[in-house]
Length: 375
Image (cartoon, rainbow, N blue to C red):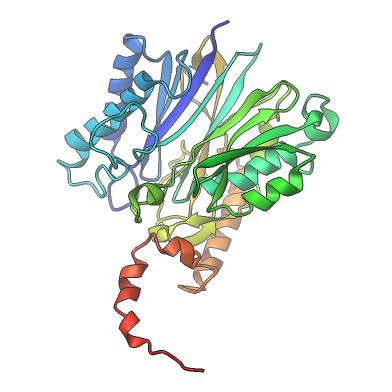
């Protein structure tokens, strides 16, 4: 049977009024290029979204993960938007996430964030694509653990015999470029010992333990590690399959009901609450202190390799429900509280992470002011 692949590739290639949002023309141009890709058979279906200052591409196809044609199509979208729209309009940070000059077979390691998942379609296959702004890949660690390993969040882990057997988490060490697989519930404590350090260990894939069925895929790009300096936040994406032997949509969304702190926010240097927002209500445009960090959730069915939405490929806006207004209010309160600490930790990220920001340039001029203290 032909296997379906969902590829989500995003990049910050320029925005209006600072790090706020792309122009409508950028989104429309991306649609034009992807439509050409659909007509020539590169992709089966697609959807273009924006969150904060990022443009994201959701594409379905039968070519598998890391396919050069798919990645080159995404690179073409971002490159042409930069050259034909962002730079001529002098948009802020035009082409920021394009860290290389020419395509080399994959966009991984070139700046854009990538999450891909390949699977054999079930009788009914719902998926959720999450996209965050003003944060890093470690932001997914907590919700992924809650969704696939915490029975207080996901009732199916207790009462569904398929989920009851647990899940396998693939964890990436961002510093060393290596991965390890751990199974829950048996290795839950070992898993937590790693993923609690969100700036180094991130969950990249999740599989159902019963049959190794792919359940989730997350982007793991750290722009600062590629460029060796701060060039913007990584703004990760995440794909989760739902229902029929996997966590229910409601269980997946429940992991975001209490705003948790993530690194990023202003200048990539502060901790702030991850706020679930509605993209239909234009809540995906950042403001306060360039934030707070936010996440959107897009829901589809997959049928015969294509996205099926509420109107064509238009996804369900899963954070539009009035319930999430209460969560957004709580996130706003947390954001205001965190800012009362100004530039004091823990409002500001740890020193190790600050080394990739512009702070070292400030500290360098102060180094001569220190004198040795003899015992």
